[in-house]
Length: 206
Image 1 (spheres, helix red, strand yellow):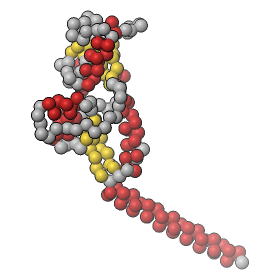
Image 2: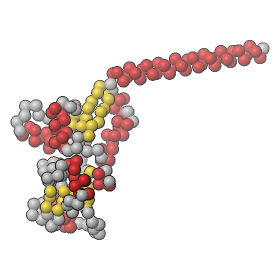
Image 3: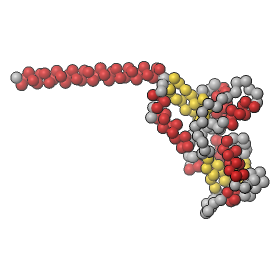
């Protein structure tokens, strides 16, 4: 009797293992089928920063894949680089300030860019000082040199707007250097250029 019970248990275990193998195989095949069905979307982002953490979380957690999308994220530092990537067809979507679309449209291009979504509401740049300043106010910028980013770029324009809102003339009260390319701003500041610089996280903590 014990041998019969033992034999039945062994058969049940073997059948269970076989069923688990079949289920796992089907699951793998479904995953492969899903991979084939995913639509590839190439996205050029203007900066790789903690400010865009929700986007990275959505990609890493598979939220886009759940919607049938395979996201390839490409860093193209600066809105001008993002614009060029979209216009050349290297990417499908550009993630940058909306000013890029306006500039292309104003040039009379027939194949102009279109803004279709707002992903952020605030500017994500930080104002970094070369020297520690206790009780800092924007008045401390007067007479100083600031690496502000590309002229006409969203961070630089936002910076000028903030100065004007606080009674500071961005033209006469300080020197805003707009000659440094977006990707080179932190390097230029580290090398000794400027008293202040506007940077995205994580560049400002490097």
